[in-house]
Length: 268
Ligand code: GRG
Image (tube, rainbow, N blue to C red; front, top):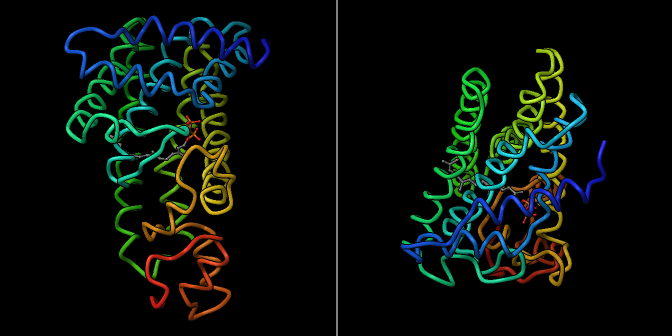
């Protein structure tokens, strides 16, 4: 198996070759912009690593890994529009730097570019990858819709929350790993098990992301700390705080989350 840095260095080189800025510039520049802001590249590295683990090499999984990273970045552009978020990876979001219409359209282009990357695989592999990609994309949409719906609900349960983060975040991490296993031609059993492993990892990852949204260091978090509570997002911290002390004053919750509430007189 290779080192983590060799997966991400190789991925970085291929990303630059894949996303080329051309006319119309306002469509393609935002793609290059969000990618050069960095990011951990967690999902594509997992694709490459999984392929390496099952087959002893990872270059053949490069297109799938690139597709996963483009899909992830597309979803960030649209998510930031929906949340009216000012910051991503410590810099202006795409819709702040350009405008909402540019964010929508360049996000759409990024999604299609991601899908096109599967065309390099032979027909059976193409079909398996494309099927997993479309199932996952629909689940991500469903997870995002639950997240939006929960903003205006006060009766969200922990199981509902777990389902929401499973769809919004974890299925993509599961799919990223399964794609590596598909390209490696691993057994059905291995593909299914690695998918479940990735989903559980994804749930843990989102729990941590929620925690960082409340308690993260603004210097390193890259997003606006406290964004979730400002948008009335139902997070694990919020739901468990509600379970433990009800009714909770918004000001107390805000203190817990170390940020100021929009309206301190609001009752949660
Ligand atoms: C799938 C058609 C279709 C639409 C997308 C906008 C949307 C619907 C979904 C949003 C999904 C989303 C952005 C979930 C949050 C996932 C998450 C934890 C993002 C942060 O990931 P990191 O920390 O980011 O890996 P970096 O910057 O490191 O890449």
